[in-house]
Image (cartoon, rainbow, N blue to C red; front, side, top):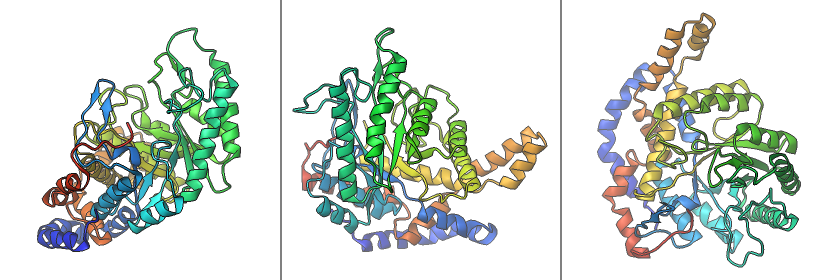
Length: 424
């Protein structure tokens, strides 16, 4: 389904007076309000195709109604999100879950919703129907050259699909590792993985990047061959200038200082992108900002500092994507909440007085430094985020409008109550 522009306009008109009262403080008193609003308009977060259906765990999955039954319907759902918030202007595909049968037609469909294709994601952590070799004991690290070649060929095939869609990046996440001591020669597994990645790297078009994603645990719990940012950085450095580290917020051990990792990767010019989610225990894949919003702000604080130090464009020089699993929520509602949480943290970080913060640091004034950060974090930037949406053509209150229009019920009416989307 498509969301008619007049419905958004009607919604905004009813809420406009109250919104303008809240916004007046910013427009009247804050000198940098306009630049922040423009940065928010420019900032787009890619939506993963696999997160448009209900998620699940190894214990079960409880699908909701009206889930997208095809890649075309997934694109329609991202189009709905983008119409509501004007900040979800890209879609990221996972192959082979969402193989485009006609690249040109899919590309045209996405463009009709104002969408582009973000990073392509390969899948060698599952065995697929009719697959010749199993990934039970790894893919790019496997002791059997034939298994490694199968995984290499799959990644190259994913690149070809991406070229047809206008994507310019490949994300490689590997479940490779070991479950028990003695199972794996760590050094040889790393070397085999590096050799495999080099073959994939050689197949990249000139304008492409490859993102090497890491994860501390799961599904292997004794070792992961790309288990932390250090291993990912090693691979990226060995591969070459088109290779970067990708940070998934849930892929760390508890209490990891992700903001420091971000700072150092930016310093080295090797941070490629982000997968946003939130967690209480590990890789929980929860709604962004639902558990640790202050950490999200601190991460954005380092992102802005590091990107500005290198003269990078906030909107285009890194890959921004959500990677979450909506086990008990409506996936579209969850994604609307996540996008807004990202925008809020970004806007708050843009408020940080960086000159004053550096002065406090140089003076070893710990209290002052903390106050500067928390002053920005405690500022209610929701009017700025809403104004950016309004100016871009989105809804002042996207989630409220989603519910007011009964969009989920409309999707159930179109698709049925018992549909199940591909993905996790």
